[in-house]
Image 1 (tube, rainbow, N blue to C red):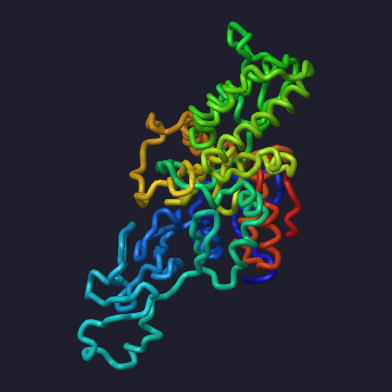
Image 2: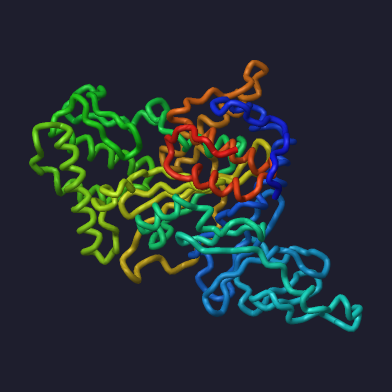
Length: 463
């Protein structure tokens, strides 16, 4: 990649204004396909999808197909999904190729490490076309992190771990590598992939889009808001609240989040919290909230450890500031951890105004009790399917309205809050850096500024 910046359409010239055409213009979309996606790390699969030797998963994005396959020694390799003979797609979706990777067209065969095992009727070919180096399947870079395999098609791109910081260290401390999949859903949304992601980059929308997330006291008979509110998901503030209301508000929030995003708060967590209901707290609401959170963290940590789950100490995480529950990893990956659970999001473009949105529900299991069966690719559900938890279904409902509104002749650009919607500006300007073909010496520091907790402010990316 180059070190100088190139001009391209719909570039961002003011950080708090994002040109609307970036969400539907085909030329801009094709620039992303050419200059962004081949040069970034992408989450290709969960490792539970390929538990045994020979298990493979195909990952497709913007016209490129890579398959990830489990090796004899338990390691993982990734290959471009193209036969070295005439380009036929070798595998589809997922399955097992333990006995070899066989082309469905002419029967050429490869071992799991990509070495060619057989060319049917080799005497028909010129010897120069049978060179083992040329016949070997073309590898794609693959690295493992957090229970997933990530691929990158650029041999010169920085390593995965560097490209995920500080996102990686944050989630390692929370034990994400020990989490396993409980459920996996997907949907096709009629919106640009960036628009779909941005719905989860700020909590500014929570009060209007997710009104059930605004904590209410059990003492408010008419259900009116009593001064308890949420600044960030999972954080209960206690303005004008009594110490008794702190407990009721927390229980309300946990139950609501369990219903709305079941992968983040489990019934086991609610059960532990309800066992603390008679806890005596300080009269001061702020002190009461701090004491409640400390005791709840201790109780959830103890319950999990006594059940054989190696949950990190939740109070220690809090003391270290590792409490953000919605976190973004550039370019298209999210983790939403809470206690020993997490939701995981991946968004892939299907065109300028269509994308595939996937959510995994993750949790920790006692040693040896994680589900044994390998995962299967979910059939996309409608965005309003009742099987979706409440919170993503509410977000999905807004997105087509926004995509349509962006086409208005009167709408030129989004106007962002630099204080709470800065992440949208930050990652969009980072995309500009890739499209402008900046060098990784400039891009990597910017990636590390962009990835992390939502509700971020606008940052100087250095270009």
